[in-house]
Image (cartoon, rainbow, N blue to C red; front, side, top):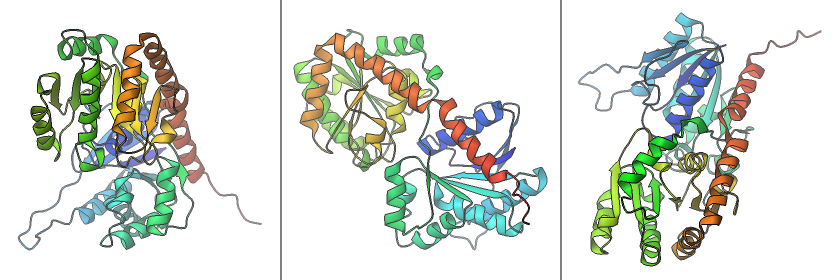
Length: 377
């Protein structure tokens, strides 16, 4: 198969999943073309079977807001025409779904179009009245639509009024990316005294509830002296830094910013905290589980589909920092149970969300769309 992939090339979960999916499809012998405004950060050196097409937007004084979605549609059409791409798979609906739809219109109805919904493209931006009609059009006109959780599929129907069927294909993880020696090196630096290490990774937006992370850690540290490593950056970081200074725990908290590969820091932890107010799946939590780090999360959105209580993770009502902290304290005081949860976390990630298992679902979807239709009569 010849597949075109469009995603945001940044550190967000949708770009990570799109890139890893494209790379795995290339390893399976398919021809993959990434069509993005920059090289996806997880792509690294472009391997055999993969081609990168950069989308450029011409600068013109008339445009206050350069028309990226139109430039993307033109680049998609050009890539399809010149490389006989059979299927476009776009990740994150805005603006990729409508750009792909326009490209297909330019080309007279080809190639096939798959749209994968990842979360805020529906729950935040897509549901905004300014975008809702065009997002809905892009979704309704696709040949297939997938969502990363049943929760997100339901929200797409409810918030956007979408009536079409949506296939649920979860995010996935390659457990082989977890390097025990690399994680151990991070742990020696982040916890030089050998105390327990808690970890959080996000983009520090309000929906991630970074202040809840800090409040959980404050309660844990008061009973079990610990360290906290925070991976990522974003608008709530200044407030978080002010909080740790004001509560006297700054010497136990390290803000690491965006680090690569993230599995090194995540894998160094004893527990991973993700108390989000909304989470369509929770890829960071899955990455922690794959590295054998139990997770403590909220029960927001799709997290209960990832986290089964007592099976490598624990989910609590949004904002219940006391319950989250008490669970963390109980685990840190019982090393035998913590080790058991470590094993369960990794096993659940491998059994249910491994790259091979989930990419099989995408590959089957592609094959179904591209299969020749039987002749009538």
